[in-house]
Image (tube, rainbow, N blue to C red; front, side, top):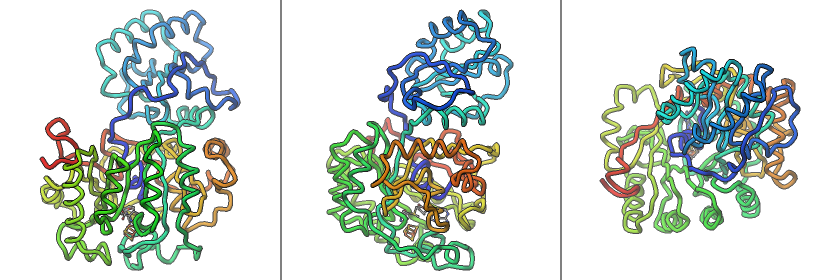
Length: 464
Ligand SMILES: C[S@@+](CC[C@H](N)C(=O)[O-])C[C@H]1O[C@@H](n2cnc3c(N)ncnc32)[C@H](O)[C@@H]1O
Ligand code: SF4
């Protein structure tokens, strides 16, 4: 998982997907991979996507289409590689899911006979697919489909500030540690900025309804004097706002804003559960302050009956290994969830430790299908890695929100993904963040989330 996945994917992967998201009103779309991209809204409308292969007869297509609504049931997305399923091959690794398309059942009809179709239908009726929303289609095929035909995304981010009140020792943006980490020496001497209210408003207003939106920073959100006003812009929009912060500036006024705006998640980065460790990692901060702020946020949320999930992010330093149980015990009763991020030593290198053993070594990155990020100066990044790269590599080809409508930028980046010579693919070639697309529940090779609160036992934001 990438570093900015803490901003982004990491926070939202384990959150339940909204059912019945707009865009699912269509019916059947048949598609051949040879087709040229054209109508970008087609996949947004599709409920059933059939990869059109020569073996699929019209009769077969009609039969699948007739059964599709039953198969899909209440799921947002269900991907069937029918051939593999029937051969009993592995299907634990999702490639396209409801993260990538709003509501779709995808079938590769290559070898489906009537008999097999019936078998599949019966299996689906038993709910076999309910816990695993999709089966494994080849990554290359999934990637091709999404980059050619889809402009759908389910989350978005804003990095509203380039400035910070800390100099955390592992931070790619503000660290001054040249011993363990190589970020400092590689940063470009670029002017740093604060996002303008016009820029944030324009971006937020262009986001599709239902989008999960993470307010964060290439620094700290709350050093932006107008952070409250920017958050307020989300208040009456049909989006799900969240914030990632170091938590040190969470005073009563900011907590009130968080509750008034109705943020669904507040994630606070706290790298250490004793004062010395915290101080050494989060240079310039004090554990006592952040713990007091978390506690006040929790109390006020409970008093207001606010449905806000409070989580902490911790970078998985070597020194934390063997400490996980103690760390989780420390946070129990204080927050709802704890996320561990694999520690990065530089921008493009693999992290020091992979957190799970399940990495399939995905050659195609799905991060750009999750959603764009707006940088503080109004440039749009297609993914977390590009957002971080903008601090290290000059990227004049990035779209700017004041010149390009957001959806056109999203499409433009997806077009670049299909072109091996595009500057975006140049970044992809050096990037390891693609493995970010691989998740099993709340676990990825580069991060994992531990839920501490039982949602059925206590409302989010309350003290169990
Ligand atoms: C760069 S910060 C920006 C937001 C905010 N200032 C904060 O600290 O949460 C985003 C996340 O990246 C994490 N992070 C920073 N340096 C990292 C590294 N070298 N490896 C992994 N995660 C890192 C931080 O702990 C934080 O959770
Ligand atoms: S608080 Fe966040 S942005 Fe600031 S130095 Fe620490 S990790 Fe970097």
